Image 1 (cartoon, rainbow, N blue to C red):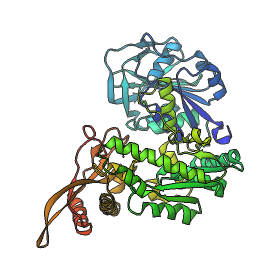
Image 2 (image 1 turned 30 degrees about the horizontal axis):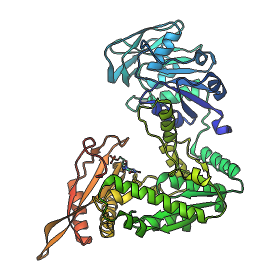
Image 3 (image 1 turned 90 degrees about the horizontal axis):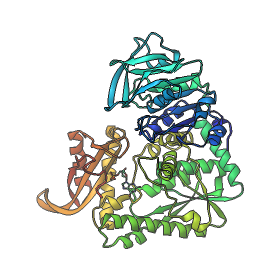
Image 4 (image 1 turned 180 degrees about the horizontal axis):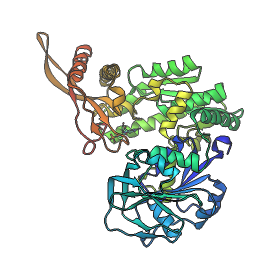
Amino acid sequence: MTNEIHAERILILDFGSQYTQLIARRVREAHTYCEIHPFNMPVDEIKSFKPMGIILSGGHQSVYDDNARVVDSIVFELGVPILGICYGMHLLTRHFAGEVEASATREYGHATINKTAAASDLFDTLLPGSGEGSVWMSHGDHVTTPPEGFDIVAKSQNGIVAGMEDTDRGMFAVQFHPEVNHTQNGDAFVDAFINRVCGCNGLWTPASFVEYETEHARQIVGDDHVLLGLSGGVDSSVVAALLHRAIGDKLTCVFVDNGLLRLNEGDEVMATFAQHMGVKVIRVDAQDMFLSRLKGITDPEEKRKIIGHTFIEVFETEAKKIAGVTWLAQGTIYPDVIESAGAKSGMATNIKSHHNVGGLPERMGLKLLEPLRELFKDEVRNAGLELGLPERMIFRHPFPGPGLGVRILGEVKKEYADLLRRADAIYMAELYSSGHYYKTAQAFTVFLPVKSVGVMGDGRSYDYVVALRAVETKDYMTATAYPMPHDLLSKIANRIINEVKGINRVTYDITSKPPGTIEWE
Ligand code: XMP
């Protein structure tokens, strides 16, 4: 379905670069809709996509490889502007009979580039003022002779062609990666390509997206009823707020309290959605069921499976009680869509397929409603703010599906979960009030079911231990321990030991990932 927010669109053809998603994010930041498709997208699909511009991504191959990835020549004949990045630059060069030199070694990291005499409008955004700038390189091959009609507009300090253009044909190419944050003014460069060269008009904004999706959901749902599993996490919260705006009472949310949530979490979700916004939310207290099934189970993977299966069972039982439901809403977001598509086509380097809630839609004959499936995470957050959700909810750290189940080492017991909840609430309160919460990507407390000796007043104590964890990371694949100030750690430890009877020792985890993981289980 296309309406005005999708009317101006950029096509990103993916040659397997680790940075392709970043290209899409920069285009969206330039307020234009875009989609990533594999490099071998069928010609009729390329034509019917009707792009206002095409970006050819980088890739780890050389254009001289036996099975080098190529695009159909239609791409160069549509008469729309093209930006070739790295491998995309080499491909474009070869297509127009320029020369690319294969290289046995890769250049990787920061490089300084300079405008050459013929610098252009577009490259002026990247290299303003002195004409010198710092960019991120990651390549083997490079262009030695640009195709006829192309001007070299920037060179690196070791003489490599860093940028070239043929403004008459609207073709541009760069050896570096403007989509990566390390490239100075890379965002301005992409923005200028989208808005000045391709002539897009900034139709894609959080407000226009929310308006479009609200109307879209209203139309396709009609008089039907929709069910949503609300966890209190960002994605399901934004779906709830959006669908509530679209269809009001025809949305029913199910919130399952599995006994492994953080302190007051259930009450807070009910306060935000049910009391404050008037969303229909059914709160299911399934604590006993989860905890009894976890009794005696110590293996982390087994715990995860039990929690996952029990959730589906509880959710399905509740769903069956609600009459007339035909849709199941889910907080699927664009990276999930890309990864599933990549897994199918074999293009993704990070293969992970996205699953529906345990096959529930198929089993119950429900249609899937995924209003966030075009959005990146930061766009979901912006949509949430646009919908008036509280900032604390929108910018909260990620919380794993199995909740405290993987933060209580070994067997899960209610006593442990209660102690952990109280300790963690103190830790979070101190992080918020000291301003450190948003400087960390994820912070939480882990419960260690071992007792150690302490002195409390005149007596000895023999109580449990908790570990505080806080990490810095962008992608959660690698992480480093956050350098938490020592005095703050001392304050948190004192508060936990004084206020949570049953815990007498607090430690701070300084392990990186790898070799550690972020969670302890
Ligand atoms: P690890 O511990 O693998 O965690 O370094 C990376 C990120 O994934 C989260 N995580 C999970 N999320 N279900 C989830 O929904 C899980 O079973 C799970 N295990 C880890 C973790 O919190 C971190 O953000």
